[in-house]
Image (cartoon, rainbow, N blue to C red; front, top):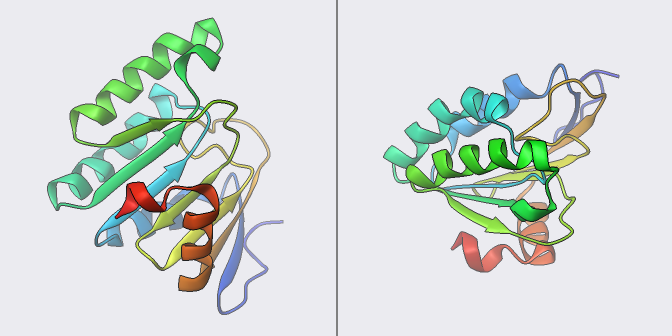
Length: 152
């Protein structure tokens, strides 16, 4: 299924339809972007870095939660290290959570994406993401995952 199922507050996307609306939401962020993605690749970061850089230049807080580098496969560890350094260089707060496997994004207090797609590494897998436009859901998720203190 693509993004054909939609209500006034939620929309479903797959790996082919996700990034365009996600990037549109990123560009509109006013004060916060929080992304949880267990894996990070140079390829995906290089696509999103120009937008994230503009956000940071505008003073938008960007927080990324990923798995510790020692939990990455040896081959991918160096690439993840490089991508994380690129993010930290522009002022992105990178957190590391052991056993991390959540995939979600929060934009301001209004938009929540959640599903199976690794936002910062996805390349060729079949995935699903739901976009929820609801302040209550955003705040509930921030509290539930424990990122609320990092996003103030």
